[in-house]
Length: 474
Image (tube, rainbow, N blue to C red; front, side, top):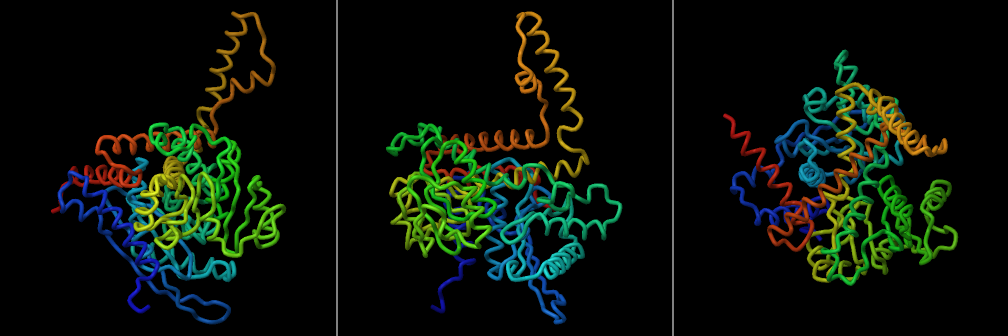
């Protein structure tokens, strides 16, 4: 139909509706709220690239939604479906996501209209470096300006190309590697970044399950992950790690939905084996002891305790929300539930753990990587041995006073100092726990019935304080 909005426009409208609803609870002036809602800048570019002897014009975009804190921060996605409204919506969510978890960045997002699955590595490198160059020319990238990261269709390889391109133009800049996060560890990346979003999702779900007050009227036996039946949509980086960590804590993954179809087994699916099967065969279908579903969205409507949509936006909408049977919808992706669908789900008593909180693990660990790049030292490098020596002295004193000796394994465990991945995971866990309880406190104070509105309001109030403190220039 001619007048029907595209997916990007629907996504942006949905984000704005969530914002407007939360803003109605705010004490901030209409002018400040309007500033918080609107993107600060939008840069669109078209550039030529030679692909297999032919010149092709590639479209790129970068949206910096908020400058209340710098740098702005957000991923770059490669997809033929990239459009301005979609990128604006994702940049808007990034602003609130950073505020919810107290990461001192403004929100941003980028996109390049290219299909990463059908493009050669050479083409992808040429496009990535040229896109980075366009951002550099306009001063739209830098450790203190705007820091991209991976998103749908990109990964550590593309981030390394961007970092190298930036260093070429900014030769000798000591913090140059901080121009982008999600890099390989050998190129200034941080241990634990690959699984950060999925691990953050696990921590968020775990915290929700322990919230007896929230779950008391839901006829849902919470408290722990043990035995919870989970269906996950998307077995990419986010969905795979989220499902893996939940499974390690006792959850049963009963369904996995992917682009080519879905699989279901009420007795449970081994996530690592399923991932390996898909990598080897190019399809999740025909995995051992599982029932195939040609239409993967059918799995969203099946019985389970927790549904994790970890693929793309708008997958739960007014057309299928009434059929959702999960007790908790945990938004692993950005914007998987539309505003209309959310109203239906809430009326059914389904708890929604919102994306701007739940998938903030990625940007949290990106923040740690950025700090590492600015300081030019690996976390744990200076303190690990000193900690171990201190713990060893304590263990020796206990053994001496008690007259009992520990085994070598026990001594090694008790005297281990914190290394980089331990510190990263500890920081992420603390961030997700604190953010959850902040959101719940706002729910109670403002008598807000759902987590998303409370999360948006938490972010709005924090950003509003920044704008009020900064004043209006000139």
